[in-house]
Amino acid sequence: MSHPGRDEDRIREALGVPRGALPKVSAPWLHKYFRHLDMELELPFTAKTTGRVGFSRSDDVAVVALIDPATHPAAAEEGLLCLVDDGERQAEVPLQDVVVDADHPNHQSLEDYWYWFWNWSFDPRI
Image (tube, rainbow, N blue to C red; front, side, top):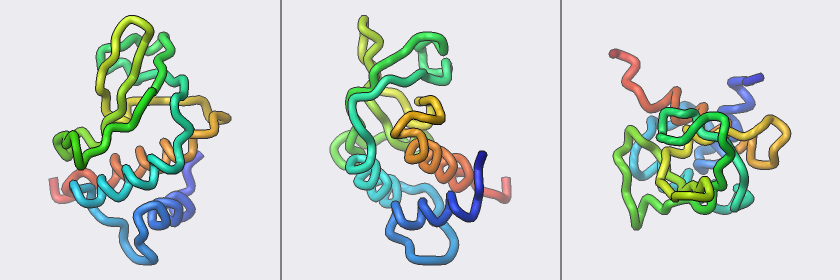
């Protein structure tokens, strides 16, 4: 269950924003979030993908690396990328398309990233 106030406090901490509105998703903020997640996530880890990235939703994949946006930039609308391996192939997929169970050690960090990416990526005037 999401708790917007607490979610946003954790995201502010991850981004180094002491108070106020969360920043809109952009390349500089994605770099900051990458640095935070690079320290927080336990890699490699087993996950599922949303299914929209070319892997079956029912198959486990190993998330083997986060991809540094400073050395391998993605389009801002893709957000951060990670390298996944299903035992037969590896692919770069958007991190928001990686899903773990609620009791997984990386769950809260991934959920917080998804919450920020989803809610602060789009122009509210659209």
